[in-house]
Length: 186
Image 1 (cartoon, rainbow, N blue to C red):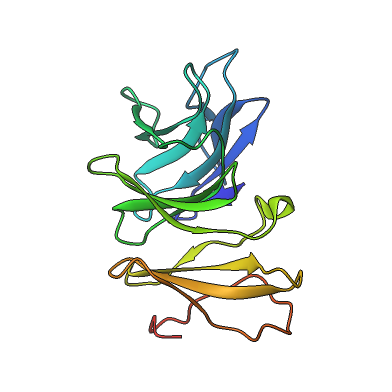
Image 2 (image 1 turned 30 degrees about the horizontal axis):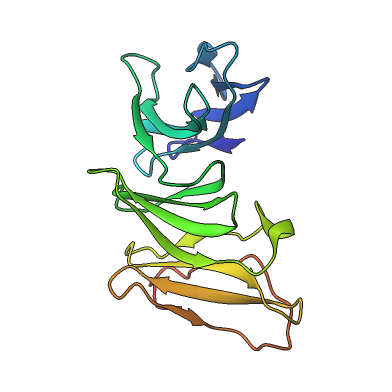
């Protein structure tokens, strides 16, 4: 679960449905109302106006995006050749969502056109859902933990501009949970 950017509502997944609940006053909203569909991994947009999640509503998992108030239809985007998705992270500028797929690939979806770009492949299948993907404040980089052959995790940064990855930490130190400072440079 996660608080909205305004702190007024909480977002959660329960029994294959996506809900928002008020922190203080208001009604619970079921955004999906889709029995028989596994709606999972919901996240708030940076401005708090939309919610994204993955659902297997036919033909495999797709990314769904809808207004947080539950009004109107959700739009649906393919997630490329990925069969499933974990750890979605919405870029601060609202234009992309990064996630880890069933082959432990870090993927980035451009929301305007649905184009999916592979950023990297993790070294360990058991790390799906534990990479800690996080966007830089300027939305130009993502950082995450990646397992290497020595079974140590390193923090890696991927550049949106160049499409290249760069390890940031020592190969002999096991690290996780990257975070950016407010200036976005560290």
